[in-house]
Image (cartoon, rainbow, N blue to C red; front, side, top):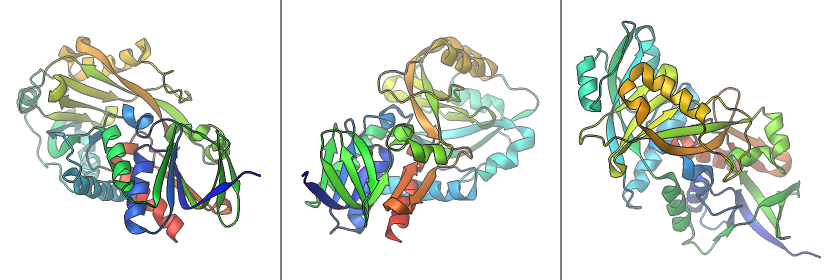
Length: 355
């Protein structure tokens, strides 16, 4: 008969959502016995490929609440963890008829009421821009570029200072069965874990067994996420520019002597193979079409980038749902905003298992 290790809380997935869940749970419940399980090394899955740009925005009341919680919590760990970041003022290029919608997404900051001269945007970008008569330039907010994998690993390391916390890496969860009161998790190495509570934060791997039924029940799909690097050194006061209608942004990365251009990929239902996804001509063509429209001088300077995939819901809002039969919360499906909203998602998940 196999021996079963028992825990108060099991967290499956050592990406940014799982790491924040572990960190917050350890602070709130120091006497809980907690285990974190990741099929690879913690922080090296989808999180490691994230663009890592933090700007507190939200399209709905819930998303704005998550963004506010997340901005505060990221701010709280910045100094203790010695995080190195890049900060850039933000300009917004939007259709003049949608400026109120653009202003409504801001959390903890405001987007100015008057249009900024196009020449000022060009000065801060160091490149010419093409805008038509229907577009306006607004200003507001500060974008912060982080290393998401480093933050995840830092949160986990801080949590492991507790003797009650343990981490299992390099082993997948292969079975998940109700085992009142809680859940029995079977690992690929034959080990069994019993958890009184579980948080499943596996990112795009939610579409694989044993989690696939939950993904199907909540209409979760996987979409490719791509950001290209632009081989041009930003100037010292370089700004970021967001294009809300295009779901795209340009962020200076002075430490790399490059820019990061994040854009909306149109490739759905890919699988989260760790080394299977690559940037292809389709991705480059989608990105260059946006760049040629607004920043044509940069279109031919794309040089590599980062690519993975993320879980998306039909509404575009993160998924945080309790499965009462297994005392488990499925948390994630960040719809491309998992890093930005991760602390808020973790807060929601913990609230459900603490209730």
